[in-house]
Length: 264
Image (cartoon, rainbow, N blue to C red):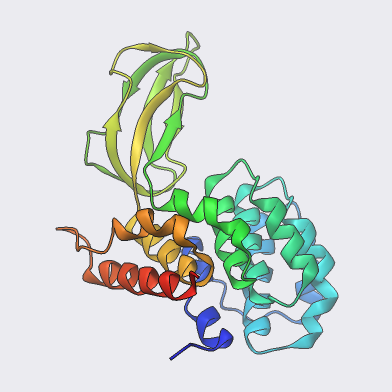
């Protein structure tokens, strides 16, 4: 039986990249929301307002539309954490063309977490432009050196990394080495450049195995917008991995089945 559009959209959990350890449960008045949304000096105030507006949008509160222009502007905010949260929130109203256009632009953001939340939000718009980023979420992430220097790894292969984990340092000749921190969660899968080697800016240095949570969310989003071209990526996950939850394999099977049903 074909699933309704509402059911399909409910299958995508947009806030999977919401900041861990952050709780913005205190209700804000409309006046406080206005103040917090525009408090560029305190990004956490903006994040608090975004979280509160997400709750209102879930309840179908039409009064939130007064803040739509500001929410779209936050997609270009200088603080990456704010853009991550904005990309998440903009998927909550799939009828808003302004939100749709903003998340489309956010697919070009330099921060991977922003691009990924934007792709998940686009899936709620049933927009296939999300597909390349969703495919990337199923693959290892290749990290390049941000500058020239001598590379000193801080993790071993198969070590876990979260967003912001120190992966390596670069000895650049300055007083302090430059820190390379993980832009995404995952495991260190492969060291491309040798420890102690001199690397150049832009040189490939390591691969991060995709996070299980990111794989799970990408598979659910591809259930909505995936095409036959995505099947090879999806089907790699249809057999359970030894240390991964069986639900990922189950979702991969559901996604592959749904894609085939849509394919002429």
